[in-house]
Picture 1 (cartoon, rainbow, N blue to C red):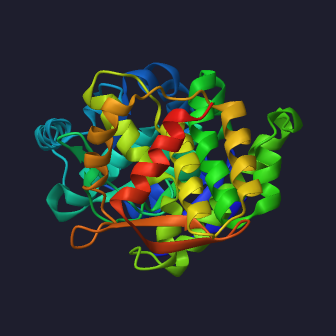
Picture 2: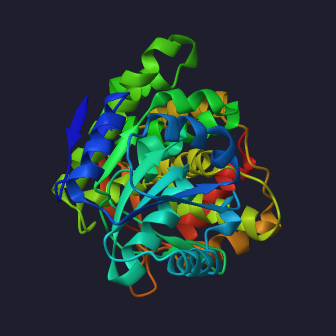
Length: 355
């Protein structure tokens, strides 16, 4: 299966990807190939990937530490230096083999090295397959703020091989699942209902569910690549979720991206209800179904101010005002929704006090 995106970028599903990639490398006549991995994908994914890649081009492997705390300019500098020392030029290709951190980081490295070299994303986590690898966003964190530095730059190819998912622990699965739930909430209510009841999902469904999520995101990206209007809806749950994630990262607490986004969706669903955009019944449905899958992140009232302060740095903010993506009915959303400090303060109080 294949989905076409902007700038001649293609998303290819299954084993067909390897043949397509090998042929693409041959046709483009790249001078050299670089594969960026982290310590996990180097061990668990790289051998299978290399075994499926047919090329005579020289390949260099660059390995970095795993974890969001390494998605920063220092890691980029190390990769740029390594590529320079290994003779990378403007006709080199960088292949990212990893989860969301690697595709975000590697895409940014490729987009900026020698003013831009080609990149191919091979996501190995569910989160990367349905979100980070698709859509042309790249970025790194700065001083604890998520994705503060980045550029829009499409990979030439994205290859989604669900066999890599066999290497994932359950919490990594659930981290990606949250982004899929988001796709259902903003675009496809039946999809949301299927995903939100894990007892109705079998292993045989996974490939088709991933395809549906990628399809939803890709269509939105095609309509609005630079996030001027409808693409903003993909940020539902992320204003609060990124603040939760950044707070935990800054205080040496471990929370997966998707877990933070799931909790952010609860808070932002509450704001949607307060703005009379969804019913109280729908708010309770969203809260109950997310809580059935994801544990609550325990914050206290005293920690709330620091979380609110982090939201003030969200990229959607304009002139010091906070703008959110909210739900506007079932599988509909509204962007550029002005939310006051008092409103978001109330919403986080709701979250802290809820079960």
